[in-house]
Image 1 (cartoon, rainbow, N blue to C red):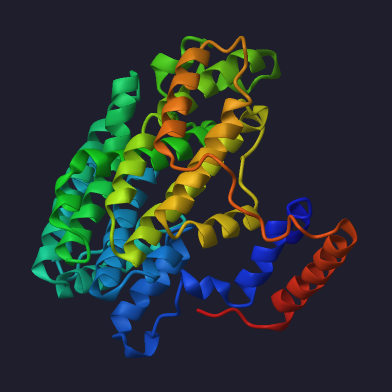
Image 2: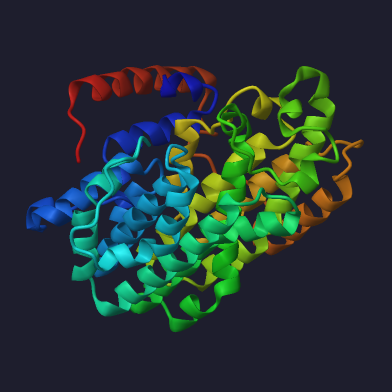
Length: 410
């Protein structure tokens, strides 16, 4: 139960309760589904079914940008579903990936042979492509271009493994950096952000790489269990003969060294993330971009030097996630969060870790780039232990009542 996991974190309990009572609407306002066409409502249904983390922040975007990003996400989710589906023969999958952007303009195209969890976005691609063609031309051009470039990149990596660190950057660019670039161009096309946001592809690429590398690091065990390998061979081959060897208890020291090397590499994108976020002016765009980034650094901090990465899935607590979501609505708060989690990692750097010097160097750079290196003020630090215990009990009972006694909104 989420509330139990947060019992030792009073501010998380407060924010879980506040979030459930309606605080979520400050960053995730409700949509007016009644005013939408049936096909657009269906697209938002698919968005909520297929997105583990982005559905809420996409729906909080302002104006027509919201619909453009929703369709962008679904198009790329469909493309990614093709890439992930190991039942599609190689000789069929490669042309599909290369040509996928052309399906956006084929009203009746769909694919009904997928066995992936998100197969509905392929089976009903006609609905998604319809709404794509209903977008303004400036949005269509961005989505089609990114889809084409991503499909070519995915096809390239079907034929080769991620070997060098440079290839890791290249793979992450294809599957996530291009998403950051495309989103930035959509922000500028909507005129909610300055043209420079869309033009600066280097910073936008770093936004995507930081999220993707964090996911790859966290998902080590899940990936090797289904014979997927995204950790770069140049990294893991320094510590093991085979990637799966890192999951063996006898190789724990080597596994942690490899893990810390990759975490350090991911952290080098954080200064660019800070620069990118500092440039944003629209509140909904800022929330959309900042929330996943603070979730990522919290996740990366949880993974750093953590044996659990090789035994299961490392996740941040729901109360922690809700707290980050509610706090990360301005640049000063984001910088403070970045400082907090970089400081936590700084305290856990081992004297014997091979990446120690590089880790310390990038963590200090992050610390220098954050305005405040102090923790965000807690709403509950002034409470007495007795009062705090009572408050936690009330919050727990209230959360249970709200979870079981009220229907969830859309």
